[in-house]
Length: 160
Ligand SMILES: CC(C)(COP(=O)(O)OP(=O)(O)OC[C@H]1O[C@@H](n2cnc3c(N)ncnc32)[C@H](O)[C@@H]1OP(=O)(O)O)[C@@H](O)C(=O)NCCC(=O)NCCS
Image (cartoon, rainbow, N blue to C red):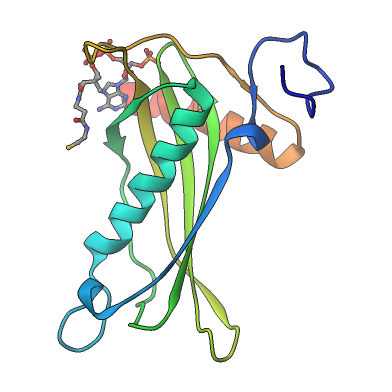
């Protein structure tokens, strides 16, 4: 039982119980010869953060089923810190939509900018790799509620 959950009798997992923030310094191995970070390096961190959220929510392994459209809004350079924030927006029978926001920080100035946002569908799996049921998401804040509603709408749109 989660001691932070005032509504512990209702089944589900609080958004705050699975939320994660990953931070990683961008190094030359992540970059092209001009010092700009590869999109693939950013995608890997997005996938890692979404996997942590999904695994925490499901309390078991998850696999990536889908990464929705993603645009890289501004470049990232060697020496910038990448800050990846991820949380569960909604969960259905076996899948969880994780929202991920990526920011970069110039460590010299403290300036931060939005690099990309993504929605990732993680599916909980059993030892045979077959989908297994997950608990619902329990929203706590108005922001959680807004994301939950938007996730339901995206689920409908994906199916059409
Ligand atoms: C994800 C995977 C487990 C789904 O298996 P499946 O037999 O197709 O399962 P189902 O059709 O029953 O779907 C299971 C859930 O996944 C969701 N799902 C599967 N593919 C999806 C997709 N492309 N987009 C969104 N949701 C998807 C379904 O909506 C369903 O959700 P729900 O149970 O919450 O309603 C399977 O496709 C798989 O193992 N894929 C490879 C995953 C992987 O290796 N990822 C790393 C990429 S290298």
